[in-house]
Length: 547
Image 1 (cartoon, rainbow, N blue to C red):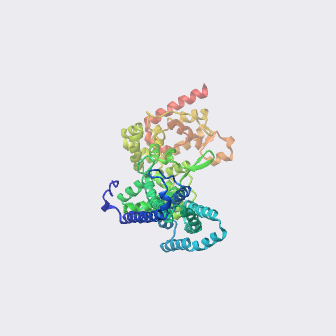
Image 2 (tube, rainbow, N blue to C red):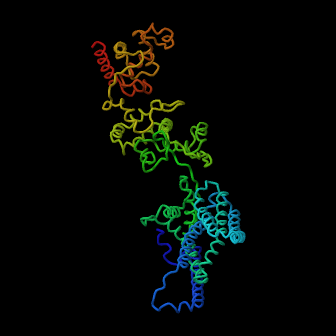
């Protein structure tokens, strides 16, 4: 897309063109000075040069080797300094410094860098400690720049201090360095020696920003990095704000510089702490390469609705979301006043158990038709058997999903669509698996008594009051009480209570001890299916009790 945007010189952004032109002009001036210096040195040393045999190569003297090596050190020093200077303004702005502050600090740094040279120059003359002063200056100059990367968010004051320290280092080293250079230059020619120094200095000043630009564009394998893709893609997609992990803070100056060089309007950034995961008793950043939880497909495969994932993510995104949700239980998620300042600065912990609980709540608030539609779409992709059940009788499936749905306290049995196959299995003969395990006071002996009576009383057409009245009337006939409180007052007087009688019937019909409303289940199963399951359960308990 944008890889060939600046093939023509006329398309180069003005700022970049000015930088290139300025550097080329400087090289031309430096080379001119160098030639003048060489001519002067040649004239001065004419007598000595005549003594050298024509055609014989002149070996580099120790003084010239020193000058060149010192120039190489200056080259790398200027690469560091000028590379950092090219993004200094953007970096300080990122850390919270105003435009006025950036201008003031830039001017203060230059003032310190030049005015303090007089002070340290006099100190160097008096102490004669040229090398210690040079080394100290280089150390401050070179180390202050990478130290900028260690400055935390909103730490612009520390960054400004480091910039002033860097300029102070330059002020300390410059007089001592130039004095040392003068000793060597006196042997090789002053003009030539300082010409070499200036060429290497300015070469470093040129290469620093250029290499920084190249690093932003290419990886070691020559493929454009995320940095370049970020600038181009977000510009083409008209992105205005980018929210990403705080590990990208250090890259912001590069990105802003890249936007500027490409002539694009920069985006605004928000950097947040990463989501964490517990592992081996500790915590680490959730990794998109190592952890399936970091991929959207993970939740889709499990059948967790997108609405549930979004709801959970908001609970870890803003600390006040859950209070807002309690106060606004039916409000749309988009109505929440999200605030970046309410995000955790230390990183939220991913909790699958809490996500499951949130998903149960979200699904419980859906209508039966919404559950059917979303679950059916998921089953088409991931569980064809469930989709086939739904397709066999959609109206029946919606009726099944309607049980105990709605009202002030809806049941929360379903956490994800993959739970549905088991949840509705006892409603279909082809998926029903009998299980006759009993709980509480219910036992095989009591089950035989209850089922022998109830199989003749069951009528799936009964309304709920009639149905429950039959069960209560059955209790005394099997030695149980229809009143739970009465049982608690004297448990030894009864075999059980109405709840135990209901458990026997529930297990016989569904194979479970915990289900939604039993009367609604019975009505959907129908008379024939209910009768058949009651008879099968009775036969099982008779064999177990008498066997």
